[in-house]
Image 1 (cartoon, rainbow, N blue to C red):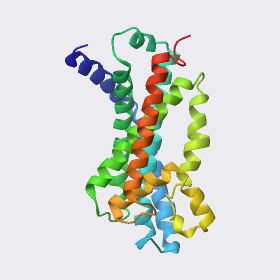
Image 2 (cartoon, rainbow, N blue to C red; image 1 turned 135 degrees about the vertical axis):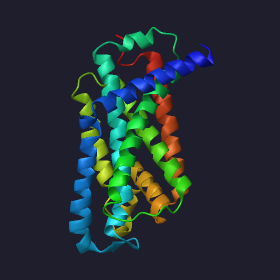
Image 3 (cartoon, rainbow, N blue to C red; image 1 turned 30 degrees about the vertical axis):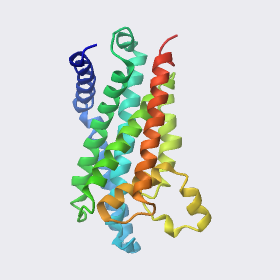
Image 4 (cartoon, rainbow, N blue to C red; image 1 turned 180 degrees about the horizontal axis):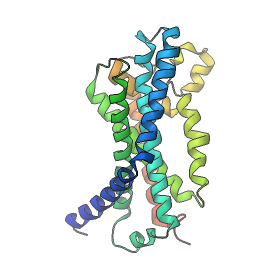
Length: 257
């Protein structure tokens, strides 16, 4: 395919994905905004006023980066897993499979669509947070790179989950039993420095810890882990999941019977 044809295929997938989640915005954009606002009120204002400072900042400022990243993670993942599985369920994915569009273009299109929703939610949550606290960016490049790479990573994860899923219940297993526990234990609401040394070591095995702390470093300048190690971890996982997703597409895993 020519570069123009590849761009047309890629942009078509992305535009379709963006139109999909913006058309049903009361289901895709509004609920995360409401949920995060409740987090700000309950954990930030009500509980945070009793906790005081953490990491040298008041509790509300400390948890805002984690809550933004949590919204980006869950929505990037949810967009791709629901969209691609719906294509499988309706068997409209076969139209893509028989087309000359390369697998990497298909994967890139869906990942970009998931990133569009995840980053949109992240921006909405960031704007909402300004009504509750003051944010000052410590390192803008770190903020931008971390949130983009994290969104791409979980879009890839959603794609793999969608390929492996055989029924609608399967697309909720990973978010419920893997993503949610890892996110809550990933330093969103606390610094791992508060934990005993053993549990600090256990927490270091949680990949979401690196993403949350990398983003928190970009905004506040504080982190429980080296921010450059965080970026390295995210890049390694992106490469790994991209290779797995492309191999699954090439073999038709879950989509060719």
